[in-house]
Length: 171
Image (cartoon, rainbow, N blue to C red; front, side, top):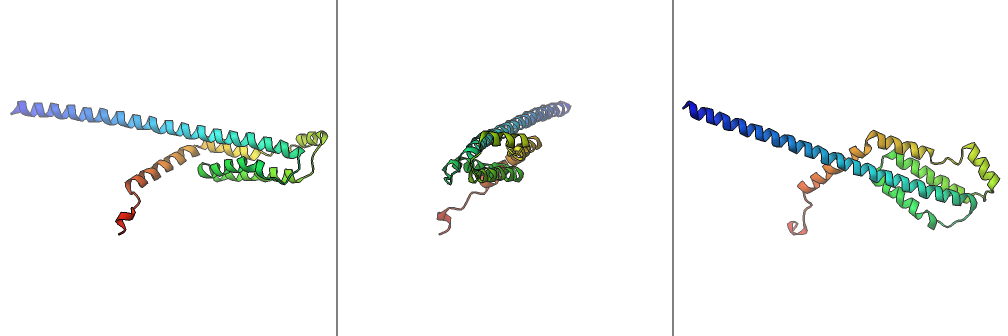
């Protein structure tokens, strides 16, 4: 009888050890996948912010030397801000919209010559992306991307657990 108890105790120990090893490996893998997802989200945000900065500076430079009422050049900038509405925090979106306002206002002012542009640069008024850059830096440093990724993952899980009703079930 003692032999059976010893054998069962040994098997239980092996099972518990194997289960613990599996749980540890599973948790480690899940943590690595989550971290990779956060890195991808942060890279996506950085790319979006960089694209916005490049387009905004191009348009601001154009606005300093051209006065026009055509909004077709602003379409890409508006699209970038719309993308920010989907994945960025409110301070980043507000700063981007403020930068867009400055660009539109600059298009509506008379053309500037080189000496006027030099004076604007010296006075610091050409640094219209300062607030945007600071908001982006804070968002990336605070881990907003991690929060957003966790939120999106949770929302995805909820949607897969509770699928939308089909028309066939309504009849």
